Image (tube, rainbow, N blue to C red; front, side, top):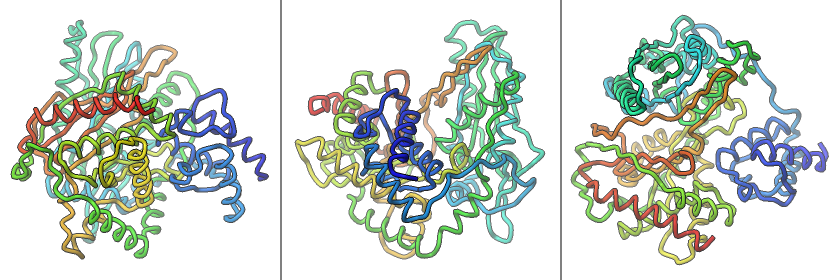
Length: 526
């Protein structure tokens, strides 16, 4: 395709992805509001349209339409690219047995070691107004028939973990009537109670699907569908895909168009993923992570923390928010400097940890979607990976330069995302005396798209991650301090997990306050 045609097509793709009316050839992706998830979508569209698969950092390094079009033209010429990837049918072979995806092995190992553990159970709530609950539950079964990762059970054959697509199992649904719960406060309390119960109930992965649901009916017009899933088959981005598929299936049952065919096959993807993981690829990735861990500061501890409390695994979960003003300030700074909001939030996280610990080169574990293959678009599955980003080497009054350091190091580790970090860590432990656990004390995640309100011809569905009330539990998998944030109207809703015997609530409250204050003050340098 001539470069001029590529540029014209690229402009249309940018308008669709960014949902803006006007895009110039010299506009940059992130000043127009792009984020890491929309960059992932952009990469998928480029792969579809031009048959060229780019690395994510190539989009960051070539952020304008002109530069990206030139890159695509050069890549297409060198690769001999043809037409984009087409659609395939939804169906998978019935009762097929196949190996686990690489990202599933860690969850399977924990499930076998701790079968009663529930820290990998998550809940998505769909609050429904004027929605036919019979068709909604039918649509839920339709989604599971469409998404084969949700139709698998797990077992061991000849010493190796395997999964099997179950053609006859359906999602178990518990229906609970609360017709007398008229007040909003009563409904909120009942939803919280059901969420806590559901997330505290383990999955039997050998005999049950990794998904179940509870339908709470509050009357003829209002209901809430709570969908509980296990991380072994359902990562963070899967929630967005699940909601899209559920709405499409519901509309089809109400007389609308049939859902579009899904690309690719989960079985095919898992098979191809394992073929790509040659000894050379794994060895290079393991060496990369060994160097990263050696470069980071070990045993980071905020002042006032108690290192001796790490072994109890007593973990407290708190709910917090980042104010509208702080979000606006961070977003303005991100757009002014051509970076993502995620990068600004992560750089601020690094800075506050350094301020409160007196240490630099802070290693922070972050979650990434890890969906660089166009076949994963619209596919629910366990694709997310954990990466470790080492923060700046020392203090600086130039906030933008510190953010650029974090961005560059983030892009470096994204190149290593296809090999699960847990696999690399196991291999490092087996071959070197490096104590990797000393580098893994902090975690940060931004779920960039969370709440989804869908207007239907006969009602409304509002979908969101449902977080249990503030609780304490024993969790040997969490770090000393983990922050998860997600959009919530014009704020960021946060979940803060911390080891209760390492950090008091006063310390984590101070951390949160300093983090929000730092975000407010970056506006001065926008």
